[in-house]
Image 1 (cartoon, one colour):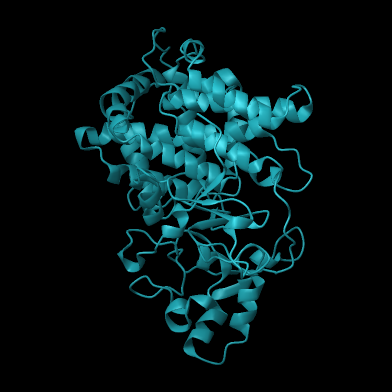
Image 2 (image 1 turned 180 degrees about the horizontal axis):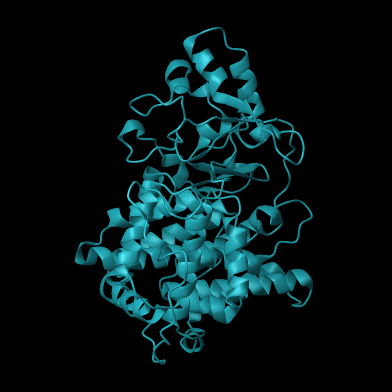
Length: 474
């Protein structure tokens, strides 16, 4: 892998909403914030039936820690079906239908796009909680081939990037609904590091689990450089790292890493349990969880040993052969997550003067990947030889609608890894690797609580949902 000029993937520009043809709706199941600029536009509307509906459907936010923030100044009051009352019978938005897309709030106008200002450049990813976005990302074998240059050459004469989207600071409804936040410069080596990450994730000379393990080494070394423990410049480190991975010299050492499917499944069960305990449960996610649990042989008397045996069979017989035929699916999932989460800096690490915790961001990425992979293994076991791309999209989309928008999920997931002693290099390797194990069989421990409880008819979990639910991001 040679160092290449940094490029910005542009696949998110191709997203188009399919409206009422969508099998899900983005107007149900979560809290939708309304930015202050949109609130003021709605307050100034002349009398009309839509104005009456808006007045009864919106309420000012009342955060416990002070006045409302400009990006979440108000929120939509959902109806008894936890659905936006502004939705028509054919599941289209009344605001957009009657007044045009320019009247939408920032959240409704941009979803499922995730917009980040990286200096003067706007970077886009997609949240896979939208079925059409999940299809666009997961099923495209050439997702990252369409790119735009990074730097002044990416800008048009009117302050827009070549995709036509206004950059941060030029359009107050994009990155800063208040229109007052100045453009902060990106970290000095952001684009070079991002390029190395994406090249590593798509380097098929290594199995995907080894690429991810190497990514952990990469992040820990960057942390060491930032702390002064490793006396290297970042450009020199990136060049040497890419040269060493290109030789394949690290592959034999990685083959000695531990394989423990039982420990891996136990963490997957616990991560899934966080979603069931902490989120409002939607019917599509219930379907995915039921397929997963059935696919790993869950039922009365199931032990972690018996579940692991079926989990291993589902992986070897159905999941792994399918992913071998479609290697781009999980590569694309990871690449989109990298861009969406501004990996390896993270949202906090991108702030001026911050020191990013790249090893922690890597642990969070691994937790998300391990959960999604584990769910897909069980779903593959449920569908058997009929396991298809449609099942992948359904599973990823329904799970993403829970954890990508849950305000505390990543923090809880990281705490779970720490408590399970899986946050270090060895534990994260166990979450990544599924090669046949030569180790001893499990000890017949009970399955993790929270995942084996049956979901009652009517699409409601017996477990109490978190009152905060999921949040459609501002």
